[in-house]
Amino acid sequence: MRTLRMYDVAVRHRALRLLDSGLSVSEASRQTGVSASIIRKWRSRPTGAASPPSLCPRCSTLPCPPAPAESYAHLLGLYLGDGHIVHCGKEVHRLSISCDDRWPGLIEEATATMARVMPASAVSRRRRNGCTEVKSLWKHWPCLFPQHGPGRKHEREIVSAHPGPFVRGLIHSDGYRGLNRVRHELSGGVRWYEYPRYHFKNESRDILALCCAALDLLGVAWRFNNRNELSVARREAVALLDRHVGPKY
Image 1: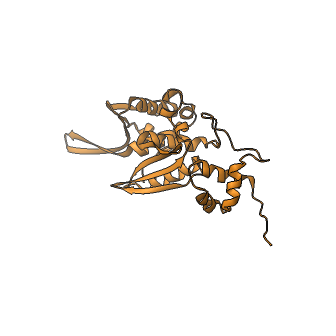
Image 2 (image 1 turned 60 degrees about the vertical axis):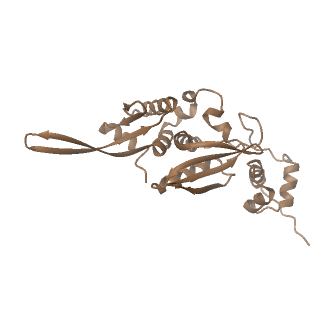
Image 3 (image 1 turned 135 degrees about the vertical axis):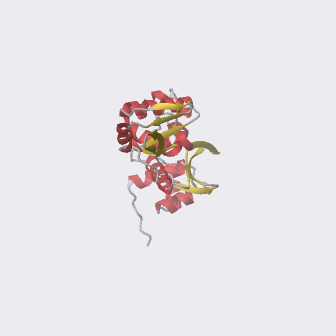
């Protein structure tokens, strides 16, 4: 005799989110452990007696769970530095972040952050020439990122609320923390001095402005050393930024 299995509401919602992200019924079944026939029934009757998942605040379709604010701020910084969104058909979009293979820690962190923002969609990786593409499929990626949503980039509340994770994402994707060497000619001979500093480089004036605004919120002194590059070099400013960013690894 076959036993009827009852599933938690969260399992049902996760299965529906997987379908909404573009996965097939069989793949949703594999990831959740729920039979394909039950998932098909859930798809045909998505509401049932349980409360439905959260509505997307931008396109008002199901499902779009709220993203953890700090994780979203970090992912936004990574995306603005080295990310893009591609339409893959059937209203599904792929978010991709390109991570330099010299920094395996960055690849791991980008993967974990993307998974926290959208836990129902599997995060995968693809090796490319000199870098690894961290990617995830979901219908609502265009709803979460600047050029796809309403409002100017520098007016996004997430940057003001969580400037630390945001700057970490920016600098780890399109910047670095390194040592600057300065040569001084003294009466006793030439001496070299080394001190750490941060750099962030981007061709977009909007993204540079976002970085500057976030650094201001953190109380970190910065200056432009080129039209498309800013640096943080004062000892106290570097020490403060180390608490939020730190070197790549």
